[in-house]
Amino acid sequence: MSEAPAIRVLLVEDDEDVRLSTTQMLTLAGFEVEAFASAERARAQISFGVPAIVVCDVRLPGLSGTEWLLELHNADAELPVILVTGHGHIAMAVQAMREGAYDFIEKPFSSERLVAIVRHAIERRQLTLQVRALRDALENWHGIQAVLIGRSAQMQQVRRTVMTLAETSADVLIYGETGTGKELVARCLHEHSERRRQHFVPLNCGGLPEALAESELFGHEAGAFTSANRVRVGKFEYAHGGTLFLDEIESMPLAVQIKLLRALQERSIERIGSNRAIPFDCRVVAASKEDLKDMSDRQKFRADLYYRLGVAFIELPPLRERREDIPLLFEHFSLLAAARYGRVAPILSGAQVADLMAYAWPGNVRELRNVADRFVLGLLGERLTLARGSAEGEPALPRGLPQQVESFERAVIVEALRKHQGDQPATASALAIARQTLHDKLRKLGIAADEFKSP
Image 1 (cartoon, rainbow, N blue to C red):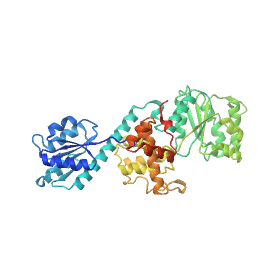
Image 2: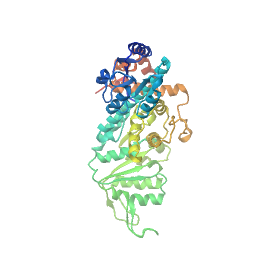
Image 3: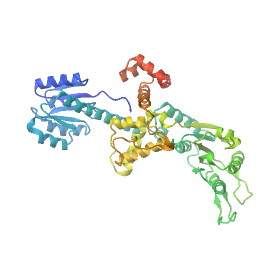
Image 4: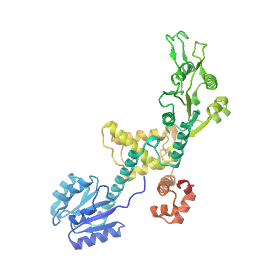
């Protein structure tokens, strides 16, 4: 996720000795503490989205802790409030929990227990604010940025290439693994072109029988074969003025490839059972998860068709190579799922975020969306990915702990560099590490900070 905001502890305690000792206790544990003698004095610190949690005594002069709880939740319903209660007020504290308090602790308490509760509350607040920031970003994005989602350098380049090519009539070849969003990119090419008012016509070539493929592409006349009872318009004709998207073109039968090549060269087709040439004007966007050049070298794909299609290329990065985009994409899919199923989009825990960032994602964005759906439906436990197998026998996570740590570390550093536009001193400060340490990690991980600088 984006850099976690620094969370303060707002301590409200009327007993001066207890207030001072608790402040010292929390400060020694590494927390930033602001202490107040009453809720009235602390009021000015509270606003929606304040980077803070509240630790408040139940019994206070003037406004009590339980009365203030309602006021706090009116200001920010997700603000963690930890109530401190004497021995005789347990029932009151339990009731406050039902009314939305994050937790309560009974006097006298040990420093370990208070520190543990505060640490968990701060982690929860950090995640809440990060999720809000992601949702704000999603709501404020428009155009292609709201469709091809991602802050990574790779996705920024994909968006630039799409917008450049959309203005032209050039045929495009899209490369990408399963689930990377090849059809989404093809639709963006169509929607941002002058052809957007005409049809976008998708055809999946995978497993399409030769006879059916020819009919699908070029159409047929009535009586052309036994079951041809009427004239059928093919995809090329139907896409006239618009865009024809040929997915999994690497699986197109070789015999059909010959006819496809001729159609692309002449920009006309003949329906099966007809000798009349029918001109068409459509842009052809093809997609493949295989290297067509390599396939043509092995005579698995026609070289002349490859060179005809390969006017312009767009290569989509797998999700594992742009891990900094995972939280944003997951939040986007969670919000969509929540709207679709009539649920409230839950907030990930820190362990769940780490799990998402470390997972190999063999199914890429499509798999991430499925996990987000199951998360919103409450079908997953604390671990979102570890228990599930991956495609083609790949491990669910990078093989060992060092690989998992490296993957997570890379994502955190890249996100910080992006936020600080490649400024290494600012990035090191945000990550709370020495500049030399950051420099060493960049070299070890092969990250070029200059790529994140503003042009």
